[in-house]
Length: 309
Ligand SMILES: Nc1ncnc2c1ncn2[C@@H]1O[C@H](COP(=O)(O)OP(=O)(O)OP(=O)(O)O)[C@@H](O)[C@H]1O
Ligand SMILES: [Mg+2]
Image 1 (tube, rainbow, N blue to C red):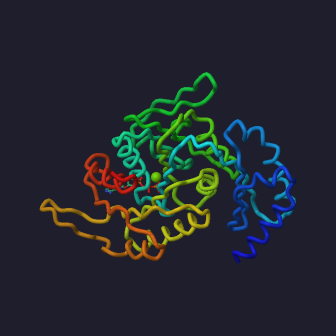
Image 2: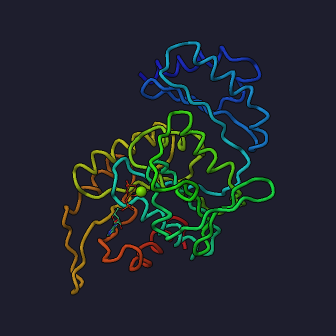
Image 3: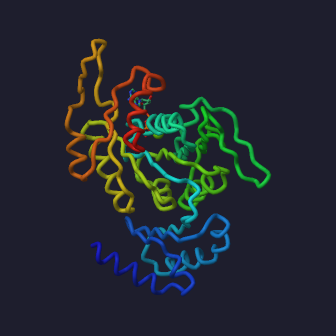
């Protein structure tokens, strides 16, 4: 299957013009959709190379073998020293809570940190951080991220009316996410922490395709259903050649007032999952009485594991 895919991508790349060919960084086929990543130096360069993006899209569409075609640029000049994603296929396991607290813990360590809410269907970062102010725009028409506890934060929830449901279709999804990255004046960051949406939809894939992710944290609880979905999430990361840094087991245990730990959902299931994928359980987080407050030590420990002392 893999060989067949590789042969197909090779043949297609060979049919590209000589200008387009060397721009191809990655070509992944998934569920009959084509994901092509093209190289550009930076956002300005990407604008100049737009004609090759179109050539790529048109060539792929003409072949009539893919249901959908996604072409995007990855920018080579790194504005973000490290990009960390927090993900899981499973909804409600604590991705957003962990992304926020991880970003805050990195900030406490003295890093310059950005936090991007990549959930354009159900953005939750503004609520988690109590953000209500709308972002401003600078003189070069870039959106200025909202600052919260020293973090630079961006979420579609800050730009649109949260009460109104938004319908995003294929190319719009990619456009919206690209805007949250390219049209925002992030400045240079040590860490960009990205809260990925649940599931494996277009929004999710658009981010995996667009950014060179350095580290990915996979969040799960130890319930069997969560683990089954998380497996899908890990496989998807691997399909897009993204390194798995480790698994965060959330709501792992309950600590009673006497300090004894109770592993309500079972103690070793996530360890087994990590072994299957040759990775490790990088943190076991308790059920917090108040997830927004009593968690500093847990996240400082997680950051120590990520960046060393
Ligand atoms: N360790 C924890 N202890 C107690 N409550 C937690 C913990 N982690 C998360 N929660 C709570 O669980 C709920 C879901 O968390 P969160 O929104 O972070 O999950 P999510 O995976 O981002 O969800 P979605 O898939 O909808 O984006 C929230 O109410 C949050 O406060
Ligand atoms: Mg979330």
